[in-house]
Length: 277
Image (cartoon, rainbow, N blue to C red; front, top):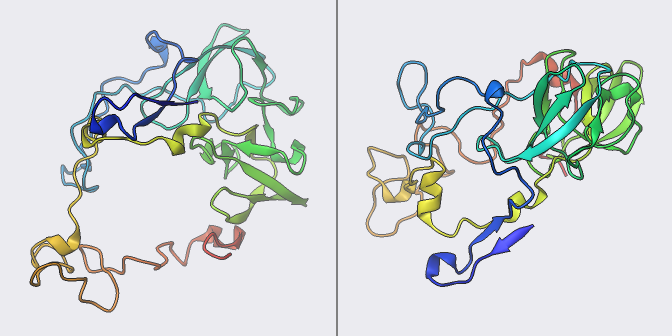
């Protein structure tokens, strides 16, 4: 649910945020927190800026998410739904029958007190995980593995869902949210349902200060920069790019160029590219 504030000042005039009334208000599960605070400031292992426009922001603790769902055929009860500052989706805390606790992504319509299961014989309902070969065609899924046992890598953002289109032999054809259609091993696990927090994409930040609290620093247009700093820079007044095609600060094509490695062995599993209508 989106919440609109009374416009008592200009920054609140178009401000829209996702309501957190249904979320747990206390501290996260201490045993499922990774050590230290996440503050990389956009820098890599050598201390160099590898991602621009990152820095500052509120301190975060990393919640350890169960991407593998490898506690098979052991029922778990949803204890609570929580906010996670490191991702767009909400997370659910599971209490397993054997006493273990784990976090998973909270799918849409998952409720506190509901029982979930991961395994070959799991029921087709939100929150349950099973191999792709056991999921009926046309059922929305998320948290999809690309290699058996590696853990979920695809369809993890708020409001996203993929769809099984067909099954043939050892592979399943899946339509991803990006419109890419690809083959995935039928033994790979996926979770039933659409990822929750669907309204996340409709929120409006409202002011620059809130963006800074998220750890995002200002971005300067290339045309506004010095010619030594950017290929689009220089010129008198409000000049355009001045090139045949836009470039990145490092001189590469900026729009429409494919960046995926043509020699990747998994290219053969892509049936339809996401750019093609």
